[in-house]
Amino acid sequence: MITARAGVLGVIGIVLVALSVPAAAAPAINVSEICTTCNDVIRCERDPGSPVPATYPVVVYNLRPHTTWEQVVTIWEYLIRFGKPKQEDTRELAIYEFTAPDGKPAQVRGGQAAVLSAVKVTIEMPGARIDRNSGQWSVATAPGATALRPAGSCRLLAPVDGFAFLRSVAPSS
Image 1: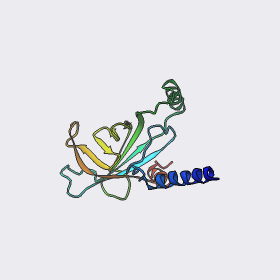
Image 2: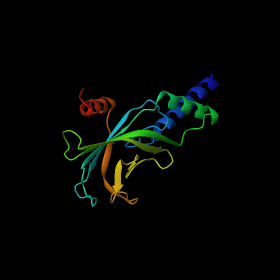
Image 3: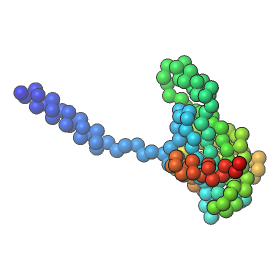
């Protein structure tokens, strides 16, 4: 009888300790390196006081899902690594640049690549970087420059909002 009570009290104690440990905060841009079917849409807006010239005050990045063969390769790489977590992934990227917050994009650049890093907790793309923990958006100081400066902040759109955005900018047929 005493052993059963001690066991129950031990379990209750473990549960209370587990509940008192604060959970790690989720990153502001919660994009996974291992999701091969995710179609992520990230909206970035320049801060009014940003020292970087604002040709495009709003930029939307679409991290596209892997093709079927790329998904097969990802699974194969996972098996070769004996289940060790993936540290980095490259995804196809489309960039939508807006001169005004609402309306059609002034420029669309497809065929780009974004590198998602679990180690640096960033998304690196041509001329820009997003800190996934804080959502801070840094851009190149000039076309072709490698130096990046903070320009604004980003947020990951909910899947339904991301798909609505992609439908709104899709070419009419």
